[in-house]
Image (cartoon, rainbow, N blue to C red):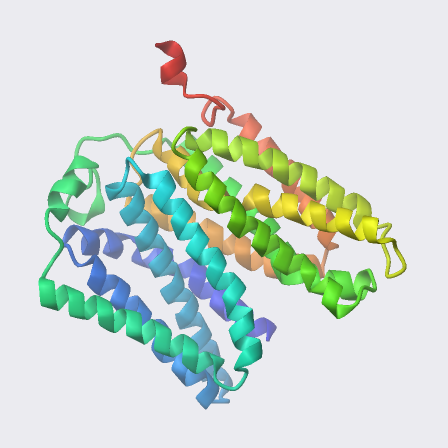
Length: 360
């Protein structure tokens, strides 16, 4: 199982690095629907093949291809939103994250309800969406005015800007480091929360299952609030505020995790879950809004998107492994401190307020 996770993680990391330039060209040619459909077809066919084989090489290849396809989908979607839907980018990315979180909540339920056919459900959903996109593309043609929208945002042939400034390297490095650490934090608690609560705290399976489910539930609900807040606050301000929630939740979780046990009172259990809620609220806007905060300093080209998605995937993959080496509460506190250090060392680049409005 660990090797399968590693194969998928490798696909997630390499996918955006290999395909970023091709993604730019695909979008410029007006074939984004075909590109998304191709990635979905690859993902769906692999999901269909997995339950039908027991050959290790085929399984590793299928998981690698699924990770590869997922990273392409993520990179292309984020590139389209940040390049074309600039004015309402925060709202669109918040809704994107809501759908992503909802899928994360529903997927385990499908697995439990349909353990023998869950892979086929996944494959069917991917293939149906791919077929719908292809039917739309070849039935209605290319989207209208896509080149004008791309030129307006500074994107030209090949996905590179004509005369607009790119994001400065210091901003790109800080953004990639931030999303890397943030993904470690969120993936660790969502992947290892149940194991830590049941094995290290001695809690029942029913209570231990509340750790990851509460985290996802809080994260998903918070995104609805952030959708509205994004209309009034700059992206970096939303990140700064959310980080306060995450730091408070990580330290509360760390404090209680080493004192709580199966015989602890209900109040302590609720306090532990409150820490998880704060962590879920805290990390939910990091991935999308860091992209928007970086875009305040210049255009993000497909190459930058590829590097950012690769950093995100590397963090998520690391989060699946790190809690097996270091206790989960220590991972969360260390992540909180690292995120605070990264953000505050670049507070002028990621301010609480719009500096242009203050200057005027």
